View (cartoon, rainbow, N blue to C red):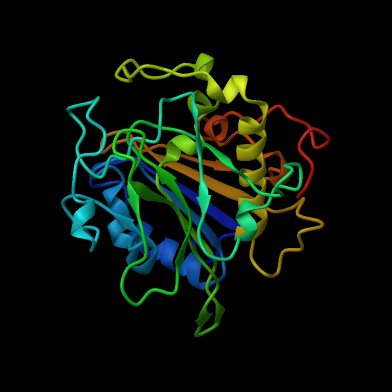
Length: 289
């Protein structure tokens, strides 16, 4: 991947341990060193634990059996509605509903939405058991937004951002660690899209009944595409840029869909891309940020 003609890698890590080989990790590290932007996301407990093989990139994610949150007060079961799932499993709300988010520190560019009266993104899709992300000791990354557990009332991290840093042959790419891939899933944006049979938690409809909820996550995805782009890519003309969206579903089924020659401003439905289906929206419907 280090020599690949791609600007960004969006890695949805949903494995339980063998999602990335050592060669995969080496290629992703080379891509990062060359300036490529990387989004990493996973889900509860040890789901996506293959990210631990990505050194400083994976270090932004906390799991139960490896790379635990250094704050031991976070080692607790938050969501109790699904007994088969353990910590970290922050309950931000039902699938299909939204959660109110809280910016941390200086407002990050990812959280801007000029269409809102506040000028900020205020809502994210919710999920009953989000994973853990944070800033390890010695890292220059920072938490940019938090959520509130609907079961315990405790605050938890939603997004960690790491900016470019000097490298031997230039600058490393920007990195985002997201607490759950459900922020991007079609099902969480609209439960009528359906879900696997093993998903049995009660559903909500807030993402459909609150117009600004869907508009906010659309704005966030557009901001991600622009912010993660390498410095050599002009925001005003990203038409030739490409993004890799890889979904590691489990140890036995690891599809990798490479979405090439896709106009970045149309990437408003990441869930569809992970299924290998290009979104239907036109450029006019989803303007360039």
